[in-house]
Length: 522
Image (cartoon, rainbow, N blue to C red):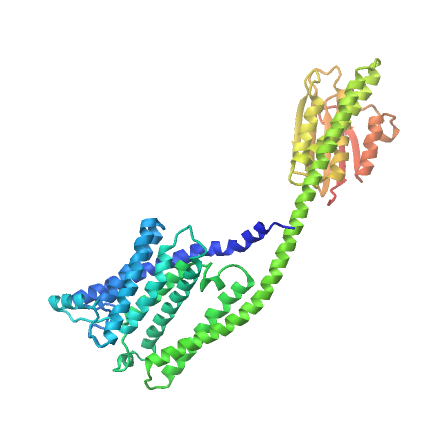
């Protein structure tokens, strides 16, 4: 069974990947929010409205509103740039609570008949001193600032050392931020449905730039909550449920809003813009909720199936790793046993008196080493099914000619050929016999012995060639007609490889053997 920590790491991989995207969106929203607030503040101090109507046919952003946007957006941007230091966290949380309290008291004083709220009074005096028209913060704006400050307080205060006690506050902050963004979108849509009626006597005014700024602030706070908390949690990750949510919920909301806008402008008359925008947004939310319920149910089933598949895959992968370790250990033990047998042959050869018998022991020892070398390469390789002949052949040739006097000049040309173990062992033994044949019959008495070994693919067949510069083969030489054990073994190995072997004279004199056999798939 796979470890629970492995499955948990897989499930948390997607939210961690979405964190960087959320940070990028938050950074962009904070930058746009600060620009809008700065332009609103500049317009309030100079009377030159950039984002709103210069003729005041629509209510512009109040100076107090711009200041609160600068405070909240600035703290979010500073957190993005400098991180969640303890001092910055405390300052951000304190300013967020202060902004929420000030906005709440300001809205309450206006609703109670105080005219201007206490937050607007100093800015009203500043406007009179500058000789520019003054605009008060509306109760709707104060309400949204109260919600924004309450959402920003836990988000700005928390750091990397989150505790489970604070997690419900962070989740609630993400939901409050979503409410702020949707409320700002409702007021912003009012301009699309007939904005002059938005400022009738019975309707609370909200500036166009203020509504846009609340959308940016709400989105920034939602991104600050992150993909591990609502409302982004249901959209984050690579699970089928999240993919369905990301595909269908925005599409349904956009289609419903476009349909509402088309109907509103197609009537030819004017309607209550705030009511129309609220109905449009409510319809979009309702459709989005309906789609999300379906997506969560369908996605939940797919996600459970995906979890079962991932668990089964992890179980199979673990079993494969265990079998790989066991197979490597098997090759390692086979190689060690063959080395032991080779050492025994070497020790036994020390007690042999007849030189001809000693040669037989040495040849057997070389054959055993050629097989042990295959298992050694398999043990060290990541691929336990195939042997890399490009590294095996030079090592085998080097072992066989080492210590031969005079030194043998070796020319080894081996392409990237990989043979399965069922072919690499007989091919290695065949190469061993051909090289031993050259060392035994071609090079004794030679002044400059030369050995050429090549291995490559030719017309879909594996081509192995061994040639020397010795006296060459005797006239009428035939593998079937020789009684030498080495040549009999070569014939047997050729049949085992389902190949064919050619003998003849090399280009510069000497013997030449060419083996061809088909490459097995496994």
